[in-house]
Image 1 (cartoon, rainbow over the protein chains, first blue to last red):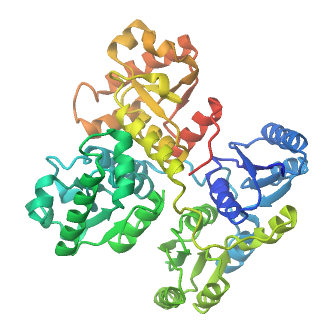
Image 2 (cartoon, rainbow over the protein chains, first blue to last red):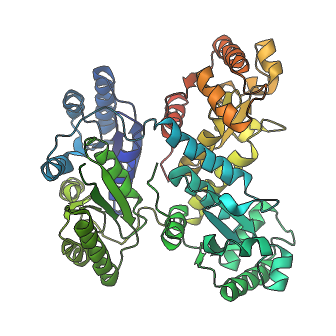
Image 3 (cartoon, chains in turn cyan, orange):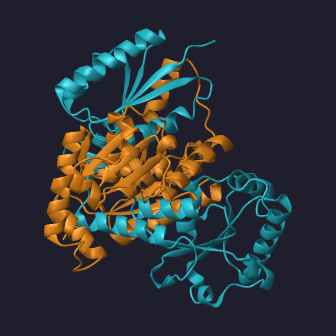
Length: 273
Length: 273
């Protein structure tokens, strides 16, 4: 059996940028088994020395050279990390010179700023969007006027995680509406949703998958029965067609993909937090 | 006034990797005003041509060459994007050759895989962690046995967003415990928390900031009064010291930073979703 290759995400901040690009790179090498770890807040020579020692020790323990995905920008810290003997991939390095040339400007290398504290207003927008998502999660007595998007689906099709993701990462006010038995029987949307047609986005899901998910939540209930799931999904899809609501299946779709498709479809433009 | 520089995050998937590294790069160039947009799911020649046309038009409209942060890996799509005339920064390109050499393996360039659907078990772990965070958000009648971490703080200090973030991105089961008047008066933790000492992490916050946040929520209430905030924060900090719980101030700290510090401090190791 091949030994696993140690990977370290090293950063002077949270390490999120390093881990995001590192993860994207590693998914392109499926033949290797990776043992990943993050070393965030490496923002002083002492911490860089400690990180280098830990990386070096990991290489000895695994019997193979570690790989470091690094976003530290300080040259002194980078020099200390190099003493680990690892292959160091510097995430920002290749892009700085072309950006400086194009923008006619030198970069400023403040430490750990990418996922640092935003200004008070930005923070508030984010938290308020999240509170909105959490308090508009049941479809009951909700005022949809303030919503940027209203996700419509049967129970357990992926509405809540998507709403929370949209709020947390884009400050999008995402409400959701769980379709009731009554909506499904009448094959039409409730009146208070019809006033917000441009904000509606529907989720659907494979009934077998829905059955699995509901089964985990309420084992052997009528709610979780495959028959119930099939009937609800068929009725919901018919309603979405009749009302011409854009619809996406969440069966093989990640939360990130759903969120991205919702924003693209409804033409919502927001910077990522 | 300088015109703003158009930036496009182009991807065959969600565009999250492109935007994450792009945002980190742009924060290093504070002198320029950027107009950012994302073009996700560019996964066919037609979409690449449409993207190139949109980018070119944006350059004409802004009167300045656009910059593309690209994570498309298909050479044909990359060739079509180049026809936009933009400066194209390819996020993966600089790291592929050194990784291939180090791993002794060619990369496989499947399209849009980084934030795609994970396997069913991984998805479930994520969703279950999120449901856990949402249903363990009030400190009432909670069984903390299943928790990976329990955040302890006064109301509105940042517990809920941190719990949701930890669940959504790391599958960490994060519960929270809002300190009651009674806890603060008695300067000690409730018995049921003391059994989980190793999982406890405390948040504190500047009282003036807390006052601003509470004021938005319940204007001119006793709860929001600066006096109340000062008293609660002082009592909470005294309790954290007495109980020797690790504590972090959220006043100038982003949700990402709090989450990262919590995991580092409690030695929780999880890959990012």
